Image (tube, rainbow, N blue to C red; front, top):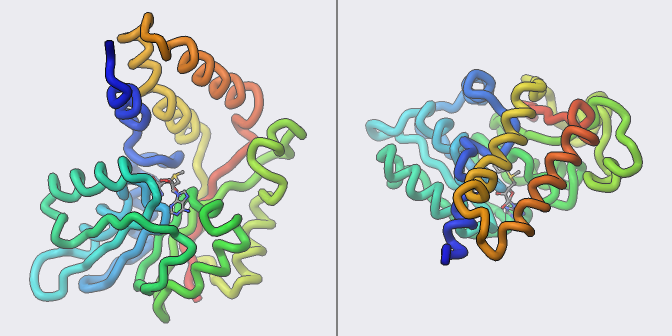
Length: 247
Ligand SMILES: C[S@@+](CC[C@H](N)C(=O)[O-])C[C@H]1O[C@@H](n2cnc3c(N)ncnc32)[C@H](O)[C@@H]1O
C-alpha cells in the first residue's frame, strides 16, 4: 500500500514555481525588481518561494549589507519545501518562511512579491489596495495577476470569478490604486502549457506508478477534468500579467 504522503508529495513535484513563467521571463522580472543590497524582500503567498530566493540572491547576501527575505503562505508543505530550498542554497540565514495570512501581514519591505495570490486578499482590487501598506517608500512591487486575454464563456468565468478583467482593466485598476507601472509582461502560450503540464505531471506520474491504488480512479478523474477544462475552456483565454509597480 502506498502512503498518502507519496501522492501529496507528487502534487507540485514537477513545478519550479506555481505560476506560468519561464526561466528567461523570471530573470527579466528579477532584473526589473532591481533588488538592492541590504534591502528587505517580502513575498505574500510565496508557495515554496523560488522567485523570492532568486530575488534575495540577486540583492546579494555576502558582507554587512546582506539582503533578507520573508515568505508568507498558509501551505505548510510549500513552506517546508521553501526552507529546504533555502538551506540547499545557503540562504537559510537570510530567508524566513512564515505560516501566515497574506492579508494580515504588517511588516513593510523594500521589494514585495505577490504572484497568483490576489484571492488571499479578496481579489485583485483588494490586493492592489492592501499591498500599498506593506511597501516602503521608493519600493517596488512585483504583482502577478490573472486577466482575460479573450472573453470567457460563462462556464470559464464561473471557474475564475466574475471579478477578473481584461488587461487594460487590470492596468487601470493599478493606476486607480496609485501605482505606476514600471514593467508589464504577460505569460505566453508555452509558459501556460508548461505550467498546466507541470501542475498535472507529478500526479500523472504517480498514477502511472500506482494504477491500482484505491485513490487512482479519483485522481485520474480529477486530472482529466483539469486538462479538459484547460484545453477546452481557458487555454488562450485566461492570461497572467506580471506588473512591476512603484508609487
Ligand atoms: C498560485 S500559488 C502561487 C505561489 C507563488 N507565488 C508562486 O508564484 O510560485 C498561490 C499561493 O497562495 C497561497 N495562499 C492562498 N491563500 C493564502 C492566504 N490566505 N495567505 C497566504 N497565502 C495564501 C497558496 O498556498 C499558494 O501557495
